[in-house]
Length: 203
Image (tube, rainbow, N blue to C red):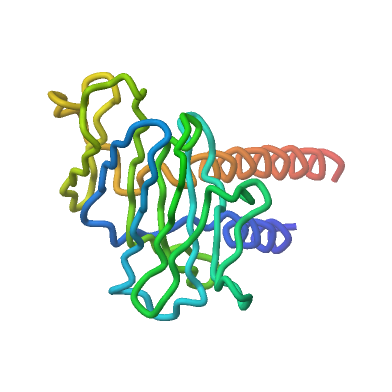
């Protein structure tokens, strides 16, 4: 029974493996609704471009796989949910940049580019995309947030003057996967304990 428990937990760890991060700067890109934007992917630390991937995390949602390289005439493929002509990727020896045309409110979120390494994802670039109404007088802007072990992400309502508390360096990617792992592990421990007590009382 113990061997089965260990084996099952090991499988669980493999299936819910998280990610590492080499992100030193989180870019914050602000554009007006309807404008075009390009989000760059840092390839300087990428070992094999064939394992590249783009992810997007919208507010209050889990990370979504967005795109990866593919051996077609475009050089990439999008997940079916993002199969929109507004989305494209610039692909060459030095670029795997995400292009979004005619931006909409639903494009807001955090975009991460990274490399798959076995069952891990090593992120090398991160950008928070903010979409403003056309009536806003602010010009499109890009700013960078320096980070070592953590990154501070200002809220949209007060991004000009907020210092804020730093979130951990995981940048809440795969947060829900971590929660699910703990929950399943707790259920397994309770089940194992109950089974052991019943087995012992039967003897």
